[in-house]
Amino acid sequence: MFNERELVINGHTIALAPKEVQLLDELTKHPGAFVSQQELLRRIWGIHHSENTHYIRILVRQLRKKIDVFDKGVIETMPKQGYRLIVDVAEDN
Image (cartoon, rainbow, N blue to C red):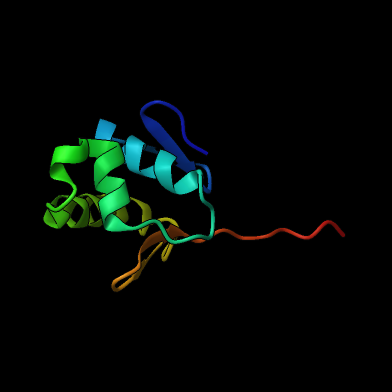
């Protein structure tokens, strides 16, 4: 769960930068599906930055450093595909 500037994982609150919030927001709109680097760049930085893929790689790396301490492997990278948020499908038993 995350709000404007915080993410809560396993009871731990993590402070987020504005761009990290935007990245999580975009990935949560498509849970389990890959979102291309270019699409993320357009949505976060604007159309004029859609080829600056190093921006998104740095942002994903920063966010992983914060998240992986509590929940490893939340964001998956697929070369030539993009990124996706790994979602657990909880079964009601």
